[in-house]
Image 1 (tube, rainbow, N blue to C red):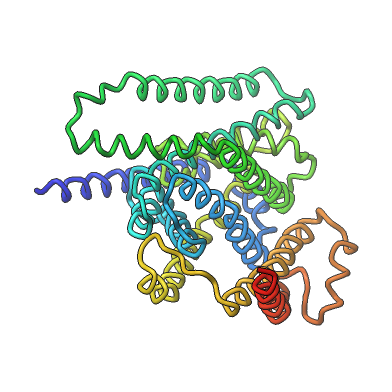
Image 2 (image 1 turned 90 degrees about the vertical axis):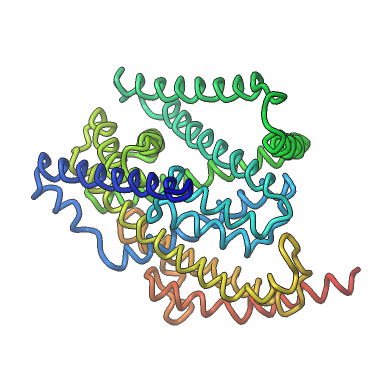
Length: 411
């Protein structure tokens, strides 16, 4: 068997083991939890909420696209936003559906290397991006631990400090490895790659403001997902859990899901939510139900991410062939108009889906959605969100073209 064949076989074997682990954990949860109460908690999840949740999930990850693109471009990758979005959404698809040791990261980076000016910039930027995501998640959990009322017991605090120590040890170990690595003893081809990586690191260190901005973006993305889970928890009949409790519990559950025992953390995150919520007096089955609802949205969203990335690839193939890898052509007035149409339409689309989940969960009253009736067909529902996108296309296109022409005349 060739080396590549052995790697593929190992990846499929690990993928099968992680899928089996997810099935086992979910089966144990269904076996030992009171199924009637679990199904009652799941009964508030409807097709409309599912569509709104998937839409909100995909829109929020545009923050992730912008963050990742900023980091790899700071290191010298030279990717356009459309190219970055294609790579990023393929990565989301790979997180759930592809057999890879590091999930979708290797898929995202591999595709980006074909489009970028520098493969090492993609690698270094992606490593920094993943590290910032983990640090941002830990900081969100830390903020929750500091702000949550003193309802936490000693066990919950020990879990938090355990994660903090684990992250600190891992960071110190990685730093020691980089400092003590005997680069001169490596083969020439490895030393050449190491030089490129060091150049990418220096490019990032020269712009610490970009790294700080990426950290803020990561925390905004994670906090937005926390808020989304607050609403989904209300659907699962978790009424008294406050936002601050979720701010502490959900990031820790997500960190627990990073342990490579199951595929995409499926099963582990749900069990961790149940355990972490017990000290707050939340029923284990309700916390698990919320995790299952969010997991359904994530799996569906990652599946649609693959579809979106494929469509972007088809529409962007002509431009990529014309400009070449790592080169972005200047936008025409028409392209600025299309961008404006997607931005304004996307804002109306995203707002309606956010309100659909919040209003459906009873987190906001009718006053929050009454203003939407000024546009016929626009409402707090997925169909209303699609209508809102249509409303935003024409004025957005006009604003985009107008802005392009003004910028040209001023210059």
